[in-house]
Image 1 (cartoon, rainbow, N blue to C red):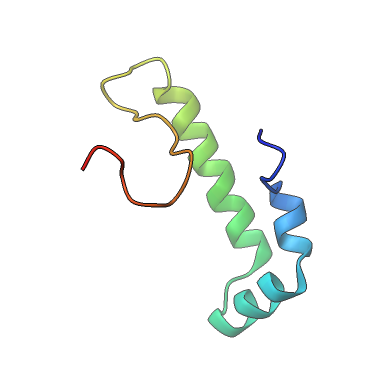
Image 2 (image 1 turned 120 degrees about the vertical axis):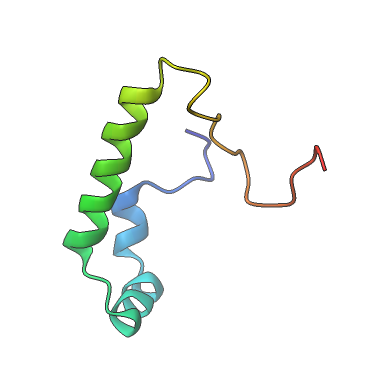
Length: 65
């Protein structure tokens, strides 16, 4: 993990994130369940490079476009 990336716990402890989740009706348990599901799926598919793209390093524009 890069030094500027937050863990899920750190993100969920942020008061602004908590306010946004409350406003949007997102429960912490539901978000954690979704993250666990994605982690399981990525682990299952990680050995098949045709099905899983590498993690993006940023959410900016795709440098290949």
